[in-house]
Length: 280
Length: 285
Image (cartoon, rainbow over all chains, first blue to last red):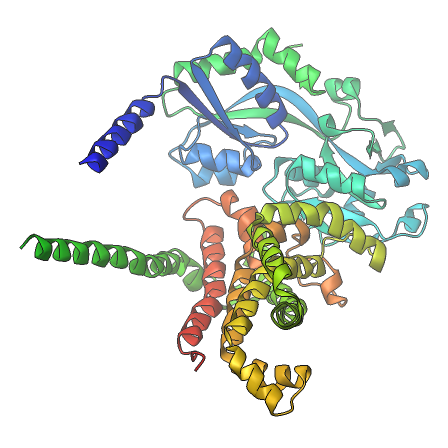
């Protein structure tokens, strides 16, 4: 008797807590776009307490897949959507909203930078990633094996980088010594090693990972900084995109959040995080 | 009358629970089989190549299967002797007062989440390996094996120690009355008696090691290719690490997804085989 009353109480409590007053916006995808969305979500939910925003990472590939499967409301993508992806999901009308610009920079460990390697050409990077150049002494540094850090094939950062250095976004990197995922992981690995090279989003640079300037065929050297990225001089630039499915009705809170990201407040978050705002 | 109904009710409840539990593995197996059908029919023998390059339509999973095998063998070759000696030390030599403390410590170790082991691997183990072996990165198959050994040790020691302490003291007394000293008692009496149980414990540890994902994923290097000559000291890939990293990137009915499920199914085969062997193991007389 007591037990059944207790069970009844539990059931009532359960159902009463089920009625959630918050509307949920689900977002997932690129780890490059993630910091912007996270910071914007915190600011946005302070202004609109009845809205809750759930954010997951996993890479640009996840962003595309989950939007196509209608598991999320907004997908984060740090590359252009490919024709294969458009063909793979014919029932989805992908629409990209660009909230910022970013550069993908080749980065090396501190020790390599301090020994004099401060600039590199795209072809040389390509040769390193394909395994033709294996040792730092071939580039004029001390004798140590190059630790080539690659990323998972579905990551937007990787596809943009590979397109720039090898002309093929799906290129194989036979010289890869490590394959990592999140921008965060790459940053840690480069900082931990003293002989590593990798690819990193510009906004993720810090004192322990040094960006190399790109040298082109004419010998012109372009450093990665806010001006060169804004002007488009730096050769490896990509947009920070948000994907929605235009075939499905966009909920008002989703549309409102997207508008917030493109507003002055949202764009100031973008530039605070060292990305380039689009409405600047 | 009421007690008869209660008994029938109890039978139904127990029967239903049993049915639910027993059907789970079968359902899992069937789902895996159905999802991997596409891989087996469309890729076929191409699955057993060493090149994984989906963009070029190459779906070779041999590198991952090899990585899983190497990592588990490494873990067992480190953990089994260590566990055996530790268990013997605990049951035969260490005073009973310490035993409770040590067993509690082992329980704590066994309960640490695997992601913690993974983080410790990235922060401590891999840099240490880089220093000791003078390699460019410590994220290697060897690191994976070492970490797995560390993870299966507490469970193995605890279970093996239980086996040894359940052997009645009379056996040991009989042995000493026959003139055997401690080490002879161990080698000619205790070890032969606990052989079948010990074997089961090793198989259990092997299944656990085969399925470990998080910790291995962080320290293995995740390079989808066959390791070069210095086998364990180069980065590699295991089945579980590949699944953990890449499964979410492929859409549900795509060929890559199907190949991944096929890989998981192939990994499941040793576990199922060991399950049958376990059931046919004999008890201590």
